[in-house]
Image 1 (cartoon, rainbow, N blue to C red):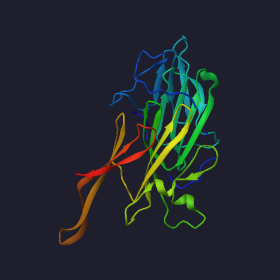
Image 2: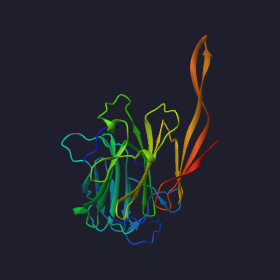
Image 3: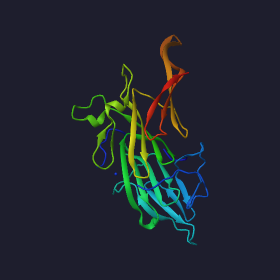
Image 4: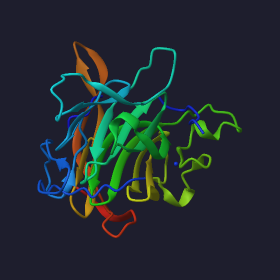
Length: 278
């Protein structure tokens, strides 16, 4: 995809049918994104239908009518309503196969927000659903009716007892924040970092939360690949040694391999299927 690229904040106090089909003959939607895997759609800043071109500008979704002689770009939806300057981080856009539903994902002020919009009449877009998760956006994909969201949350070790939101990731479907359950957090025997790499799956037909898995302890996830059935992440393995330079000893880190984790999602749940080290 071609989306563009601050944690620990409490989230603001959730949708449309997205088929995720690359079939260009489907009514409405016209594929313009260079997807890497058949059946897996990548988010973009531009998406189009047979009537409109949608563009996800910095803080707003805009559209241009292909049926009009006018070259005017129209406002469709504002991501964050504010009188102050807004700094949106990474953002991506998806459209349904019929071109009537848009899904917008963006990072802002320590959380990631997913918004489902009815854009059948872009001049009067209606919000259908909303999902918020703490952290920042790393990757997204759409496979069938499943939206896959990869985020990273940097916890704070010196948080107070009543500041749980500062060291455990949480999400909100619109009914109040919920922390990622302990049974959905995968951690090593010895924890050296409060960083969580989190995988979330949403059903874009009814905007249901299908599951979340969170990897604790600085799982860097330097690679993320989605097939029609599984998510693959790889985490580098490194060693630190002393290196003598000009008579001075310095710490030197080098990569010696990688751990590759596979998560299956095809049955509507996130299920870790193990890992290999290479």
